[in-house]
Length: 269
Image (cartoon, rainbow, N blue to C red; front, side):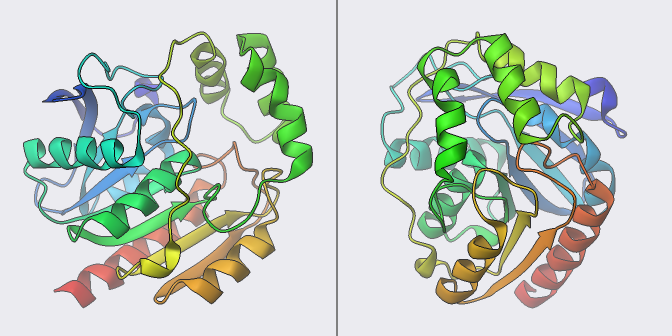
């Protein structure tokens, strides 16, 4: 996956009370920090289609979630609540000396990012890539199809599920294999409660929904975000599914996000 990154990247192992966190760092050394969180079953390496353009004006910190697939090692205090996740991310960013940053997350990473944006004043803006369990309910058909993967994950089941959600197209082959491998990775229990409260967001917010997402209805997602988030911009990305983000149709995604980050940085300044 890292071989696909178009710019030089440095791997850092950051200590915390909860364990060691792998962070991939790249982009402009003088740019505003941009922290990126992957979805469940993915790792920080998934942002290869985005870091080239976004790294022109930002110092990017792509983080492997603690207790999830990747090279972060959860060998410290147990991460068992949303408050633990917030304390973990506080420690990581403190160690990196990131006092103010834009924040982005995909899927479950968006759920974590939304909680953190409510929790911390250091978030200058937040971008949510097809966020799950934040604005709308899960599609029952998606959950039913995901049930075997949730009950007994295997590479074969995960691969089949992701190919079903993406209609067998649009997902990078390396991303697909990474998610398949992640099924055999022993992870901590995924924290899903409490649901974050989007109405408490104060930072500029961008919600990007995948038009072909089978996880939820994209139009309902953006409509709800527009109702409850005070300072929100939304877009529906055409011809892309939930699991194909953030790599598929990346040029369009990067253009929207780069413009949003530019304006958010100017407003903050």
